[in-house]
Image 1 (tube, rainbow, N blue to C red):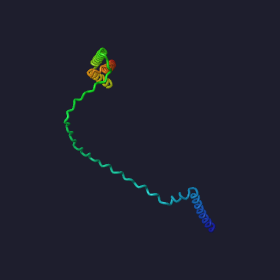
Image 2 (cartoon, rainbow, N blue to C red):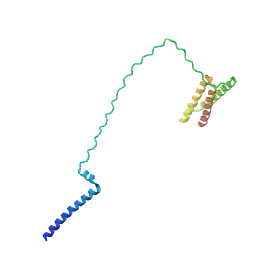
Image 3 (cartoon, rainbow, N blue to C red):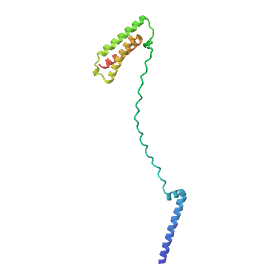
Image 4 (cartoon, rainbow, N blue to C red):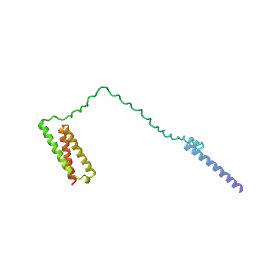
Length: 170
């Protein structure tokens, strides 16, 4: 009997070896030789680490060379003439009407904003108040420059905004 057990032990051992060989052949067949080689070869070396570039060196700006004073020309310059404002040509009667209209509109806007308490206005209303003042200032400058159509237009805008603001501020 003992001999049967030994034979049986040898057969089992051979059977295991055969199974291992068949399994290895199956793995090679399914995955290919390249996959098997990768199991036995060392892994590729990691890519070289790039060291961060050193921060750029800050250069102090070089002082600007001293500016040379331009030499004064020996010829006298003529005084600069302010160019005339291009405005539509209107007759004397129309000119007077535009001047009266602008004056009336400016006066109305000034009365309206004079009644408003600036401290009680919201931020948007304060901006509108400043816009009205700017329009009135520009209208006065346009009258001085004899651009009466522009002055009348600016005064009308100021009056409309002043009426809206006065109504909203009540």
